[in-house]
Image (cartoon, rainbow, N blue to C red; front, top):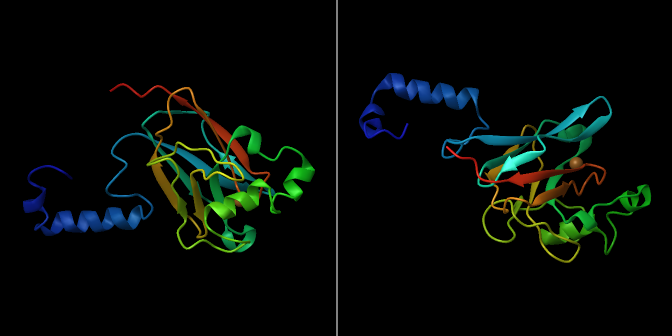
Length: 188
Ligand SMILES: [Cu+2]
């Protein structure tokens, strides 16, 4: 689509129709990005089981996409929030009290500037510069995206250095947790 001829070709009806068709078939795909490989983490629901599903590694510099395939009307919204390993709720008690002062779920709400269980105006918290690179704590912002709409997806590059393991969780459902290890940049 970025060939020198594209400006001229855009005047042609068939290409316009094709672009329209592609847009129709892939509403979640971003036209500006996704030129390279994309690693995808899915927020899934199977029966009563809900969680994150994705590969265990991603290349440094690669696009990491998170897509919500659950029904917000049934299970509520989700967040994909990078948190330090130590911040992950580990016990049933920790998960139960996650949305209380000093705990990580409320901490993530604070990253958004929220006081309680409200929906953020801006779904993205961008800590530590562009891309997925910063795991937060109850007192320090990490990267996070809030999924409030059905079928919503978000992607940005992994800017954490190779060798890092990124831990993540959902602030709404604290048992939803996962990790992905960053490997050296893919060679062309
Ligand atoms: Cu969730």
